[in-house]
Image (cartoon, rainbow, N blue to C red; front, side):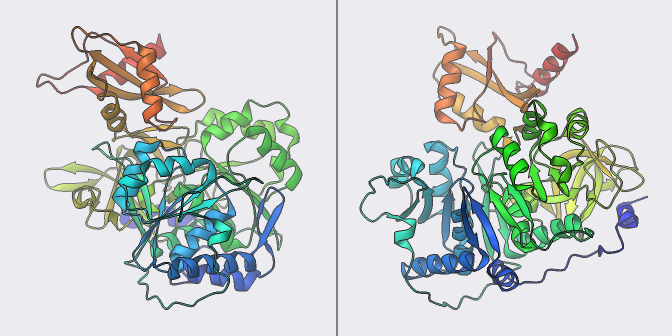
Length: 544
């Protein structure tokens, strides 16, 4: 059996087409379509305040008008550095309306990381939370930023530098209708920054069509076979928008389906439990660590998770035992999936209409081909069913490439196939299983962490001669970051000081939680540092 047979199609529900239907040409067209269908229905609820679909379009249009009059034009980049909030989505669609490129900036980034993303993307505009404003001002002189728009949720306002404005003050009073020609297949809508082998984050270029295809694929899989969906329903939106999983597979799906999204700016386990109990949502998505936290809480059984139609998980491997604990305690069904930033992000997952196989990430979504391949002297061949190989993907959701990184693009995209770097297998029914990562990437609490970036920071310490970073198993985070270092002769440095330095120069989820100083780091015969040796040593410790 080879990939052309697409064995997963035989278990598609009859209501699911092999090919996804993309109804709208651009992402702003999509918003207009949702508004015309759902009008005054609630779109977002954020700590007691409600915005309708009509409200969403009005604010989006006033923001895009203000940007347009300020000189923002097609192809310009606008960074967003906000927690989950309706303002995030207003800003996103305002950029889309003008043919601009939205740049996702993780609110946890420190100044060094922020400066790289702003500089690399060439952003001249940013919409930022007031609590993060000082970080932007510290790096602004080293970037192209010329306009900072600030969002505040509290009653008081901070003092802003001349030229900077609060969100409501920046909005135009009326609305222009600029004519912008957008090619949905070619024009980039969003840059999703992800790590790279160089240690610097690189921007994944996602077109209008990439995003439109993917959230339509996810929605069809998740909702098309639902027979008893209420006309109006609620969903909990707690996955961060700054990651494409939370944005595309949750927030944009919610807009397509006409949901009232109960938006939570961060994950707090008790708040999520209380929200489920109070709001009785129809759907919720989360990353594994969120379910680990829920599993550890008393009273989980009384929250009503069993009343949700669909609970999904992604962003990192989901241990089967944690699934079983959650399902036993709640009576709910928890379904896993797989994706990556380079595919906007979802390519494979477990929809409600197929029998679930524990440990499987599911089946490919519509218009998507997945293959398990092995490299030979004559090129790539398909691995036999049930045997390991590299997972490669082809579909309309696959990125255009990496922003200003042609070599990285060529390495990842070959003849239209996205090489994921993940080792996997496919069974005879077309279900896929992730076995290991070919890349050195660490996934900690659902976030991608790249060892080379952390090593580059550690090497800034004069006392460090050699550094290697790996992911080690962690019962809560899935993996946690551990650094091994060798000090230069005649130098001294404590493990605590190394951790403190890393914490000051890296986002919290990237900073090593463990540091071990060794007299020598493992090397090959040609002097290459061997990361795998350290990983094997850690696995051996766990078995003892």
